[in-house]
Image (cartoon, rainbow, N blue to C red; front, side):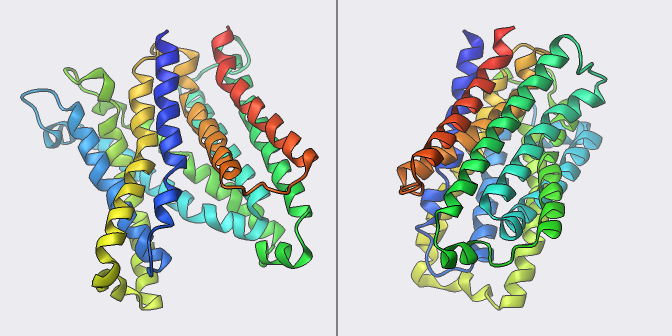
Length: 337
């Protein structure tokens, strides 16, 4: 029963993350870099800080915990900086390969590396026992993402030649593949950062929130990377004036804050959900892959609701449903043994 509760909590967080693009559409008259930086303040600093404070034992402070485990804190932050690079290059992978191939390759690698690398580093045998179940679960997740990617490719074939060229105006296979691999591996560094931050789970912490200080350090590292890039774009594009446009400032900060809260919910849900799993269980080790699979599922469900798949044809719809069902099965698979 605890596993079911944990999965439901992670699913709720994932659904919120997939819904974060709804308030984004309400941001008006701002450049991408201005919006990304402001929502990042909320998604990667404000709400992660509030979450981390929930874990602090009575009579202690967050600064004391981080100060006592500075090595773990800086390692988590370093992995977070690398994860920030993954987030920035993720969009480029879709620019050069298209949404179907770029997203499938990046997310598949992110799920695989983020799940298997901690197991490999802890000398887990991936070809026997629980290690084999973990490996098979990851393969199922990658297969589900690949099938959904194929559905996306089928959908693009049904587009007009003009729309297809607009969608992938800068198609470059070699460059795109390299960037997609970089985006996938770097994005998986969030999971590695959480592993590196485990010493921050000190005695006396509330089990529900014990992973959240590490989450804060990872997102803080990601914020540094993204802030440097966004400020550079502000300077290059001369868009610093966005932050002083009083006509839309209040509206945009509000919806950036809401988008940031929804985005952070996935990692808040992951941390809380994992507290219901047994330590060293397969489902615990598989939790990163579970989150990635759920993010893909809910993103595509939103795509269906928003009619992004409208007119795609029966074959495309059938392939999409098969991919989603495969991802759902991958969530259940580790619990069958």
